[in-house]
Length: 199
Image (cartoon, rainbow, N blue to C red; front, top):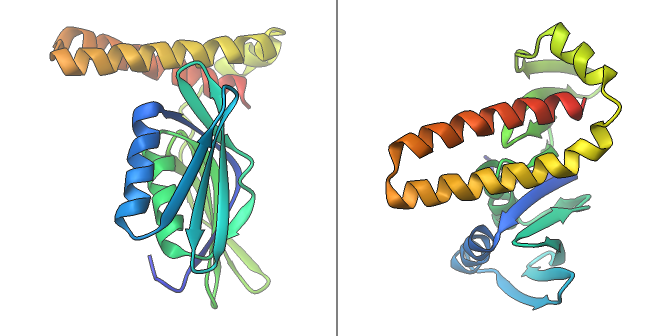
C-alpha cells in the first residue's frame, strides 16, 4: 500500500483477546509510535500519538474480550492505519475501510477479516472490482428471516464463538489434532449462522 494513502475507518467492530491486544500494542511501539493506556472494569482506553495528532482507541470489556467499536475517523499516519488493518484481518473483525489517494478511493467492506466487496471510485464513476460469491442458500436466508429470536441469538452466538476460539487455542497448544478439526468445523458453522442473522 502506498505511503501517501490515507485510510478512513467506519462501522468498525473488532474483538480482541488480552493476547491480541498486547500484540497490537507491541506492534505500535515497534513501529515507533508512542502509546499510553488506562484500564477500568468497563473499558480499556489506548492513546496512540502520531505526527498527525493523537488517536483514542476505546475497547469495551466483556469478560475476557475487548471490543473496539466506533472508530469512525480518517487515519493519516500510515503506520497506525496498517497496524489497525492487520488486526482487523487477524481477529476476523468487521469494518468498512476507505483507502484514499489523489486519484481514487477504494472502499473495502470487510466481514470476518476478509474483503467481501471492493468498490473503486474515480470522480463520478463507481465500479465494483471485487465481490465475494455468496455461499448461503436461499432456504437459509428464508429460515433466518422467519426467526424471531435473531436479536436474542446474536449475543449468545458471540459467546459461543469466543468459547470455541478458546477451545481451538487450547487444542493448538496441546497439539490435539482431532479437537482442532472439530473446533474449526464448529467455528465454520457458527460463522455461517452469524452471517445469516446479521443480514
